[in-house]
Length: 137
Image (cartoon, rainbow, N blue to C red; front, side, top):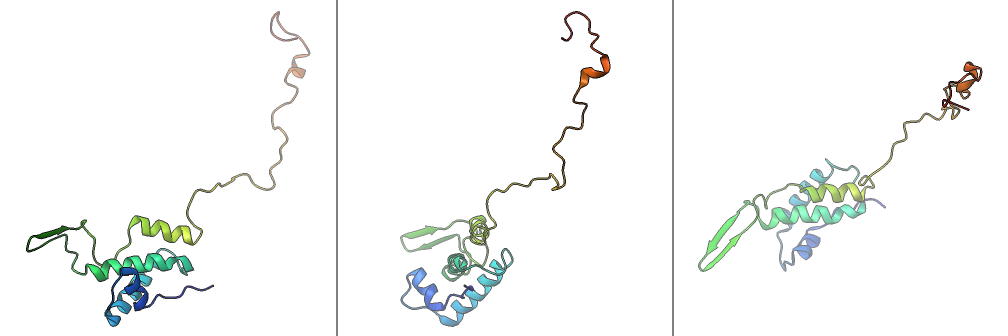
């Protein structure tokens, strides 16, 4: 199934907003899709959550305000909590959704490798059985 770009209504629902500016939301969603495609292309279906998260951050905090005081209320947001960007968790989620996350094993042994030993199997054959006492059979 192909990735379906979320709509402005999807973003409004994710942000729990009753009203949303459709033109701005559509623009931010397109920008989020383009940014996500720098990590994984084509985007898997599960990338919708990351796209909405990226667009939602930019929609809620376009000016990247980190501290705001209105009357007796003060709000402090983490640095870099606005604008269009991908967090490390976003990148990991995209890679995992595309099946590219996690550990893997690489076997460097060629298919034509011979499992037989390359050293002399009969080491003692060249000595003709002559050993000093205590050094052999």
